[in-house]
Length: 425
Image 1 (cartoon, rainbow, N blue to C red):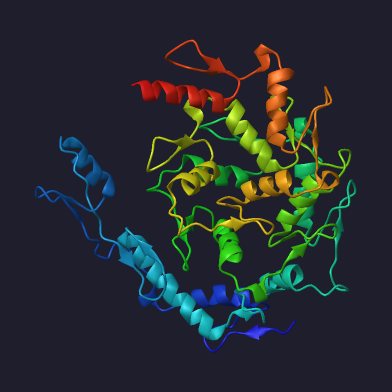
Image 2: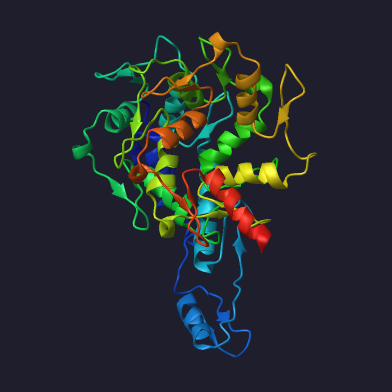
């Protein structure tokens, strides 16, 4: 590796751009350094009296003393060279210094660019990107799992896989949520849960789509949304199933499809509930089951409809409700049947229609009861059959009316009964 020599006022010889950048900062001129003691910081001023302070803590305390509990507003500081913004003048001044330094660094040391458009500060990051996104079949070093066919391009990914898939339950260090029974094997998953479930709207950093009103709490969700709805068809990398016409924009979507549709019972990787006998073919099925069956009412974060009293435990369920009940026909993306005039607001309903009316007997994937000869075209109907015929009263979740002794095993029957009370009122 060639040695990089720092110009004129430095005798140092440094062997990496990263070290040279850090060394350059030690020679920055004094005007770039922020001196806290000599700089003026604006005070927070009360709108109702002459009180003012430079500390937000005292400012909040001042307002708490007042009975009115009036809200206060602070000035937002925005960098005119990038997208940085803050309510704290000290942070803004510090960022201004760093932003100026970074722009000077970029003139001396340009970013490492990939032909696909991605840019990186370090060559190592660019090399990692090339291995993951633009691999040459002969140059990739695969890390193979010793217990299953899984392989990864990065050693860290293999380590995560072994921890998630092959580690004994008793040896796992669980990261537990302090506000609900949720727990995760990875700290990042717990962090995502806290943001999604327990962070207030005011404290969330929203990631907003530049093409539509969509916004999300997770950066990777925004990326998935953009790829799903706004990416030009020419640039989409489809993951195709080799056993049927199914294709997906996500590798994980194809993996779930194969696990649900094409594997034998013995080959399926089941996600099992540690609190009951439930098992699902998809991790999201298990998560929905836990929320629906094992969360106390007080621990559930309800998603409430803005247009009616309806509420749901899952955001996706509320979205389906809004589409079905409150969407204008012109705004809806209809899913139309290719063999008849039927159309549906939800893709799942179209799939159920095709299964019920347009598939031959030998094409239908039947859901067979393990305790009798009953079989159904829909998993939901098999579930209803099990509740009615094979579950004891102590194992059934009863839906009980608060106004009379009525109770039912089925939520739909319970809802019809409640509607009768409302009509009579």
